[in-house]
Image (cartoon, rainbow, N blue to C red; front, side):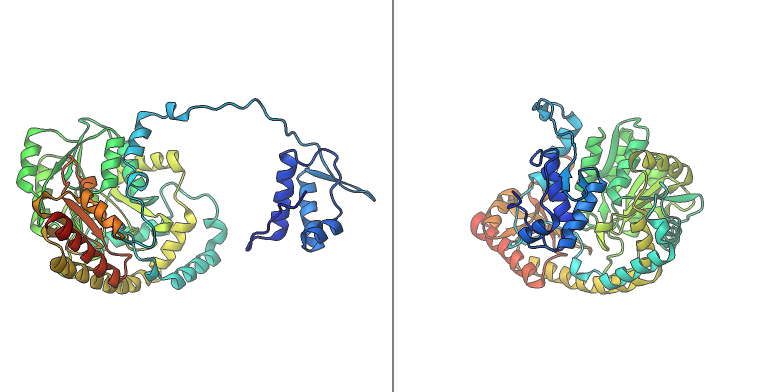
Length: 482
């Protein structure tokens, strides 16, 4: 006995010993009233200090798992260890249709498996090597010193007030009229959209969006039972003539649009087209859910105001965003900016679902933003990403025979292949050569896009970008005659 006790580095030894003995007792390997080794014997046998054993025994006694008899030693207490008759349920029969659909749409489960030795263009997450860790640690320590006892307790469903006020100002700087608007803090963009879809009345059960569009949004729309109508994109945004045609023929509950550095195409909707879109939706009295995806990653050209800014004092635009694709996605902080009355009800839905977003995460993010660190970080990140973006564009132009390439900035490019070459067949060949990417069909609302692919370059080194794109190009020419 005790021969299988193995120490793990970095964890207090007395806790490891206590948990080991506790498991032995609760599993019935140490029996009621059985005498335990003396502290001296056990410390010698396990090659640990006697004080460690003393502390572990004291904790076990406090928990009622052992008892001490003066002059005789420590013994196992009475612990209920009897098990009921075991049964095996078939849980796949108890899963509902919505969960099966979620599984079917889960790219992490059903996408191509790859290892870290491969060149992966799958991700459009930020490069963690750029993270401003030192200033984030400083922000954490500063905020904890100011109100550590508060931010470690329960918070408010609506969010951490200083962060809400900061973001309202942040959105006002973008040109948005924040009068009669409010903000709800969420666990990233995904929860924000899910909360909204759970709260709005499904009158027609139909939404309109760009085609292709954000896969996570497609997944949520389908999970909530919406019919999705996608509209093709021009190089400067959604095809407005087709949009107007559809609006005149059918009724929709709302539109979902990504006007800046669109995912997956990377297209930035022009200012003229943004104005047309807003006038059209105003005429049809239709809400717009605006995805503020990667707005900050502008490498050239003039600033373009979000659709929410074009709305002026109007309240038909619901703006959902986060810093996840730019800054610290691990803290999962996003926000919804919308009409005050809508936020009032979304707050209750948020409280019912998750109570609140981590107050500690919100508070540290606020401190980091308020200290001016984000602006400095963004300058550095944009410089690095711009270089990668330009390299990816140039290498694609030189190496890949494509029909169309889009991407005005951000962290990815979108390619349409010549001769209707199937991107999944291309992926199979590239996988064998150590390169993976995301087939574009997962972003389409109508099962099209078989000849498209998205290349995310944010987390790759420059040599990997060049090497990976050249492998894709060579594979197209050699294996597909591209």
